[in-house]
Amino acid sequence: MRFATLAVLGLCAIAPAVGGAQSTDALSIAAGTHARLSGPTKSKGYLTVVAVDPDSLRFRVEGQSDSRALSWQAIDEMDVSGGMHTNVAGGAEKGFVGGFLLGAVSRL
Image 1 (cartoon, helix red, strand yellow):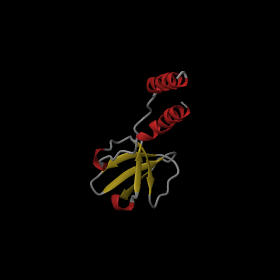
Image 2 (cartoon, rainbow, N blue to C red):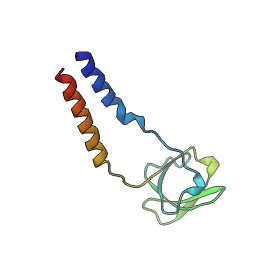
Image 3 (tube, rainbow, N blue to C red):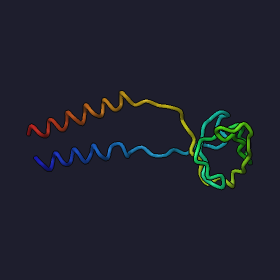
């Protein structure tokens, strides 16, 4: 009985780690998208994409009015914001199922 409870708790702890980072085609990034770059800029804040060309990215750093361009070769990594997403229903569903399973196992 104790093993079953630990197994259910272990599965509940692993479930959120299933999702991962997704790859995005650089040329499909729309103007106005928020992003962070890793490379020579070492930007701590967000950038706003102004334009995307096959050879470079034109962006504006948050809080500044002028835009800059950077070649794609100079960018090590780019985190693109997908917008704000809520997960209320998914969280409630996981909590209900986890609680149900834990309650069912503890009654055995």
